[in-house]
Image (tube, rainbow, N blue to C red; front, side, top):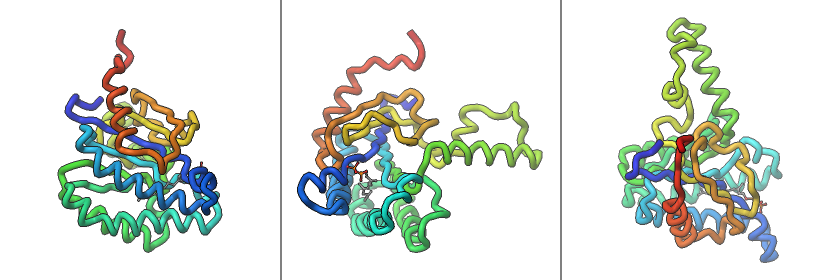
Length: 234
Ligand code: FPP
């Protein structure tokens, strides 16, 4: 559970393709506009009290898309974040990538490392970008890591606690999300942060991701503050 001074918002950014098709544009135009929405949300988030932002940019299932679209999304991420780096650093944004980076193309994984390295000292907003991420894959990896420690004799099954399990996750060290938003008029969590979202407040919006603005985030944060979170208590 995060403290009252921390606010972690996680977002499934859906609807880029439909945004483009509605305008008679190729789907990639929707991704490009979606990246602009990311830029604006990152800039606005700290002013709205958001201390961590985790966004779903590419899922383990997204490899099923046409190769051109896959390659466009990955390159778009790298080129945009690389272009924004001076601005991100001046805003004190620390960027971290969560997901299976071993399966990313070599140039993407090298850029990811460079982006993380250049923002590692930033002490402002935590921007976590889920890239080749799947919630089940993350849980499986944690289970395998702990099992390997048990097999090596450095841990025993009874040592496993929720905190220790957290420490094997890609999102380790981050408070769990307080808010999970999905845009694009779908009411699914789509394999996103399955372990971490246990007590998150969920918001499903009809807005397509490229139309999501800082005002939309402001509205969500206000609604969140009016919700009564009981964490299983009465
Ligand atoms: C889902 O919309 C969106 C994605 C799979 C890609 C999200 C990527 C970005 C917003 C750009 C990432 C860039 C940065 C800088 C983080 P969809 O294509 O599934 O939309 P649809 O449901 O309307 O088809």
